[in-house]
Image (tube, rainbow, N blue to C red; front, side):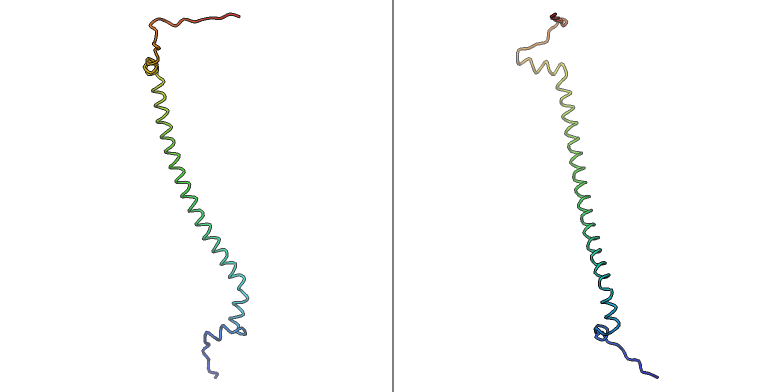
Length: 107
């Protein structure tokens, strides 16, 4: 019977051994997988950044909608006939008590 020898780590890393040739043979594939891993991680970071940006823009849109509704209601209130009458009184203008007369101009 033949005695079995334990192979050390150095034996596997020698260029002539079968393990080293297997590693060198598959090195392009391992590098390709490493490249894909880096791309995958970068894509995940980019996606998270885009999600954060979308959320901040959505919050900004909500705030702008609130401002729009506030200004819209203020303009509607200020454009009421009574409010306009109060604002132009300081200019010396006043509302007449009678009906409105139409002026017709013929050519």
